[in-house]
Amino acid sequence: MTASEPASGSSARRRLSIGAAVVLALVVLSGAVGMGILRGQAAPVESLPLAGDSGESAVAGELYVHVLGEVEKPGLYLLDLDARLVDALAAAGGTTDAADLQAVNLARVVTDGEQIVVPPLGVPGAQPGAAPPGDARLDLNAADQAALETLPRIGPALAARIIAWRDENGRFQSVDDLLAVPGIGEKMLAGLRDGVRV
Figure 1: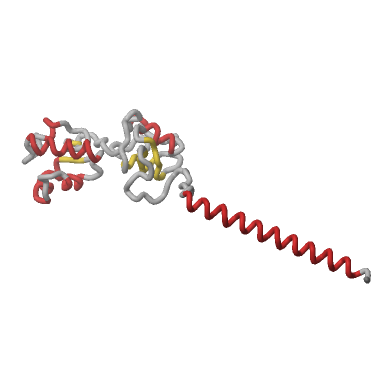
Figure 2: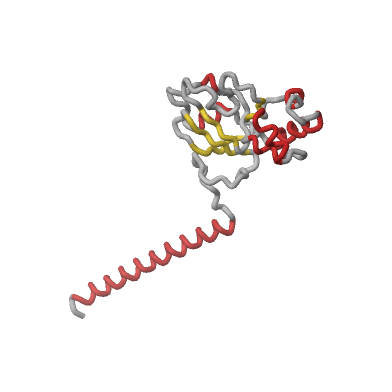
C-alpha cells in the first residue's frame, strides 16, 4: 500500500458524504414544498399597500380601500369591515403636513372599493362628497328620501330604490352608477346628471 492510497480513499469518502448531504437536503426541501402545497398553506403575505384588486375581498370580514392625496404612502389597503376613515389614513402611513383634515370626516365608516382622497389645504371640493362652495347639486351618497324626491321624475318608489341600492352596494362612485338602480335608464340619467353628484 502506497502513501497516496489512504488520501484517495479519504477524498472519495468525503465526496460521498457531501453528495449524500446534498441529496438529503433536496429530499427534505421537496418534501416540505409538497406538504405545503397539499395542505394549502401557501397563504398570501399580508403586506400593505396591496396591489391588484379583483373586486372582492380576499378574506371574509375585510375590505379594500384606495387612499390617495396628502398621505405618506398612497395605495390600496386591506382593512377590517368596521374600519373608519382614520384607520385607512393610519394604514397609509398618516397624513402629510399639507393635508386639510377639516375636509375629511375621520369618524366616517369606509366601504369596500371606496377611493379616499385627502386634499391639500386650500383646495375645496377635492374630497369625494365635499362640494365646492355654491354647488347646489344633490349628493347621492348623503341625500335622504325627501331630498331624492325633489329630483325630476324621482318619486317615492324610485327614491327608495336609490337608497336601497346605496345600502346594499355602498357609496355611489360616480353618477353613472345610477344606471344600476332598477327603473333608471340612460334617458332618465341624462335628465338627472346635471342635478346630482357623488
